Image (cartoon, rainbow, N blue to C red):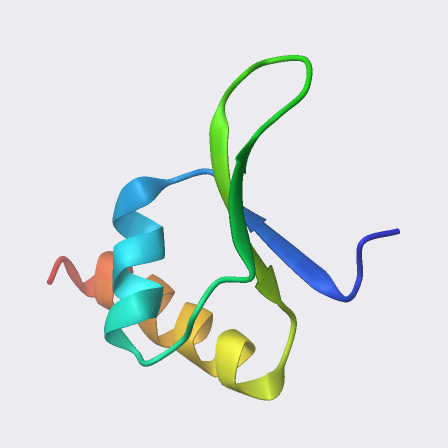
Length: 61
């Protein structure tokens, strides 16, 4: 389920993804928790950006 989408609940991560040139489909609130999220379509570019960000976090950048 939801394999075609990435739900991002972290504003800092969303900003990093935008910095990588990605755009989200929509911004909304979770129906139950009322937490804000940004919805991205899954793509090779998104996966590459996520991998890059995780590597930067692990390096401490």
